[in-house]
Length: 325
Image (cartoon, rainbow, N blue to C red; front, side, top):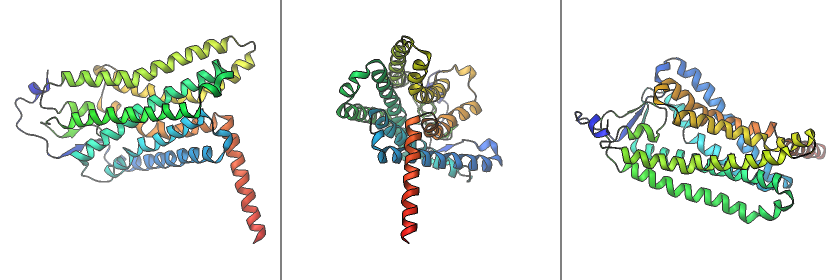
């Protein structure tokens, strides 16, 4: 059934605001959820800012892998900040509304950060591929200029594409109920409100998703096929373990991001419920950005070593100042 058929009998049109139903059904438990999400948001901000600061302060971490990690940490901060502050407010108030312009801005930022993150994860997979499969040519292939171009291209292309997609979506007319059964503005529920046949629009969204989400995912898979093939040819089990450990943090982050996103957007509609959709969305918008800096810190010897040195240096400077006083 097309959107025009769905709303052919409805005269009501949406106003300039949308109602984000979110977690209204939780009633008094919304306060508890507020506290949990506030803690997760603070962990996200603190953890990712710490990773960025740590890499900037330690020259030993000024390598392509950590250059991309700085970009990823910045993305995580922007990604969760596009959704979480508003969600926290809505958990405390009765009127859970967002303006049309606010909704458009949220769709633009959320999707831009999401697809840029996919491209950066693919760039990080390429970094691991070159480091493991072509170690002698690593510094030659992955130069500072190439890393800057890969990151810049990811940001630029994704911003342009999402600006086009957001402008196109909000140039359409909405009708029917203005209630969005999510805690943030997203393209699928907005398409259901369009007062026209959205078959072509949905095809465009699917093509863009395939290109910018599944495309980078395919590149990541291809990189790891080559990486695993190289690792298996190493003579000792200890050597294989050490080499593969350099990829473990990246693989974990990729699994978290793509696992929840693919389940959310690609699973059959018959398996989808409002509550399960909400919890999955909460996982990749709030939980995953909080876990990423922890994963890269706890599962990376270089980062742990840099953190230890930074703390020791800070304590030494602090003690020197106390002695002078």
